[in-house]
Length: 185
Image 1 (cartoon, rainbow, N blue to C red):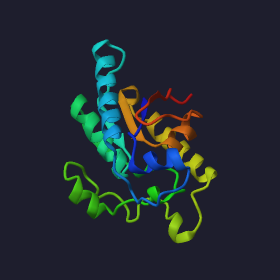
Image 2 (cartoon, one colour; image 1 turned 90 degrees about the vertical axis):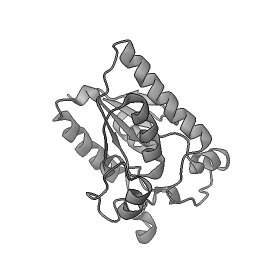
Image 3 (cartoon, one colour; image 1 turned 180 degrees about the vertical axis):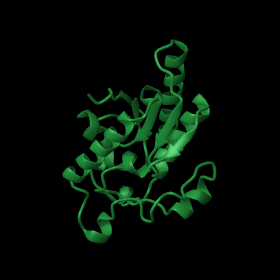
């Protein structure tokens, strides 16, 4: 399985310079983020052509930046996409407030969102409490256990986020980076 961090978002572009939350809710990709997403798709296609990988389906977080990234990758690979909130970001900033399933369905009619709760994200603004590292670890373990049962595990790529990839691998990926997730033992 492969984990792909979404391309650079409007939040990432500001936060990487200021280290201050710019207050952008569910940000979109920047032009650089779109370039990174297309490059990730092209890299996976090149690896497939060399016989190194055979991605047959994609899973993506419901955040706008992840949906835009997975759309660009799916267009390159021509594979189906499933939206799954379990691979969402650890909620700590304004960018981690998502959009309603109805709004997502209107903006991205290509995908299904009717299985999502509203809200599907951790409501850290409403509660004043960010999602804990322990809660993230539990979510990551549940994801790994569910994926271990998938017969096509090696053929799945997941478009997700910095915190979720860090939770699963200990690695802190750059935007658009592809990280291999070995099968759980």
